[in-house]
Image 1 (spheres, rainbow, N blue to C red):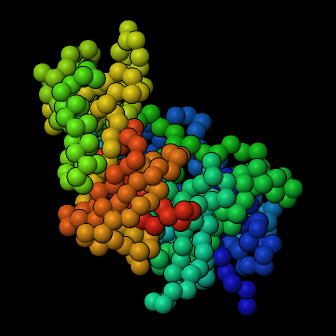
Image 2 (cartoon, rainbow, N blue to C red):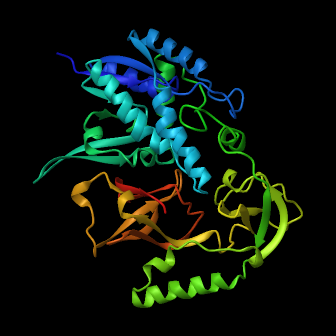
Image 3 (cartoon, helix red, strand yellow):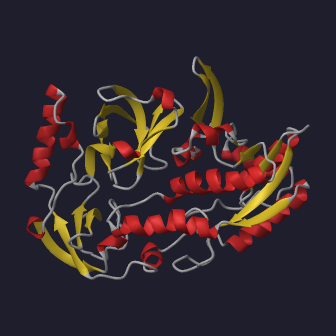
Length: 399
């Protein structure tokens, strides 16, 4: 009997080709189109409306002669993703809804719905790969980067579990994006030339302040510019040198800089610190500077927005980050570090960032990730993910 695979068909070229390849490989293929968001508040017109996506999904299903079912997960999406987003922004943190969407919706709610339809596996159009490994303890699944390195999407799956990976297939992970489009053209799929979606998972491209205003009210405050020669930055460099020489003071390299009004100069006004994120450049509306201004810290407690001038501002560039013990997550539990242990890895703190050399230090209170080179824009609320070669081992929420 054929194994049944249910593909999350999004209306894009990647999931379309995933369904095509699985059918070519002899699977019994069915598609599910997920509706996860209805409200258009804050969305930019023309970007990723689900009505258009559904039309393309239906065209693909008809071409491939596979059944397509539409399901509405909007209640679950709002509760698990959007409400969490509002909560994090209100605290001055920047969540990653795409990572959460994969963990909570695509590989949980969708996975359960697919199992109810008799699926043996689910499949998506993610550019990543899965390998099965037999260890002394039993079967283990490895999550590997996609062959097309610029398109690798393993980071978005950094919170998946072994049980979720066991049921997942990634048919396009061994292909480049160009090869995917070539297959789509050759097989006559309507999505062959469709642009990649942008913005939030299932919502599309948004104007963040307008989107957040659904729950977070405007709160006028001041923009304060912090000079690059603040004494705290020299002290931070000294603490890093001390760590390299003695191995002491891990926590000093990951603590947030604390600013006050007296540390800088008021240069403008804003409508709410909770609308901004670390490293943000656009939306400050302050001109006349020799170099661009970037957000150093949105302080929601005081509603002050601290900014610095230039990409090289020391307030933007840090040696390390901290992940509390409760937020450490291992895709490979068999490779988890115990308190007192450390491991050299490759790590990234955002999607598309090139992998950086770093060392993980597991302590009783949590995990410290210390980089060889300073990293720009380490942002509380985002996910740090660490790799050994091409394999994604684990991740955690930056404190």
